[in-house]
Length: 256
Image 1 (cartoon, rainbow, N blue to C red):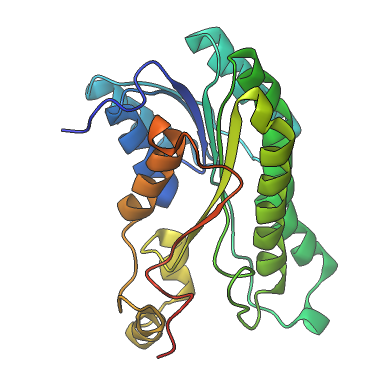
Image 2 (image 1 turned 135 degrees about the vertical axis):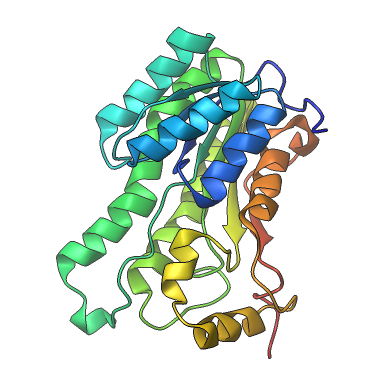
């Protein structure tokens, strides 16, 4: 049984309809958090919220596009109106985009990847930070990647730039608001068995190749990454801020 590490806490989770975000929602709820969940796919999001509620948790689903600042504001307002405030925000939503060499990359593709991964996190944080300060502090978590931090993969220039930008954003928030009780950390997963991850390894051969890049010779399950997010959200990480936490199965250090 999950200990109630987040009892009494209110959390926003983006990208919650599948993968890491979905598993984080289940873990956070089991740990006692009351949740405001968002993703674009409303049916899947509502099903997740209903399942959490059926298990005795509290979850509110608000579908939308995290590139829309109005959604970022609505999520914080909902957390305050429904649950009394905000303690945790897991800004997890993102996309890889199409693999493309930089000279061939359309500007629209570059902009979409940066808007979805980086600008959306900025928009979320600008509304989440005042709400966290009103509660005396809290935890901000951003899903970055080892790509753009310890490795550059061909065809992933926009993704790498956006994910590297998240680490910089995390560090500035940590430095700027640490004295006021806000911890900010970036979570850097390795290859993970999610729908987005499976789309980038569509054949058994491609999956085996990616697995072989990791020291553990396998991909992560989404729950393994979500458990690291739970650590960063909880008081177990009370002295952890400004970090880029690699949860990557050793892909950053492995030389197959």
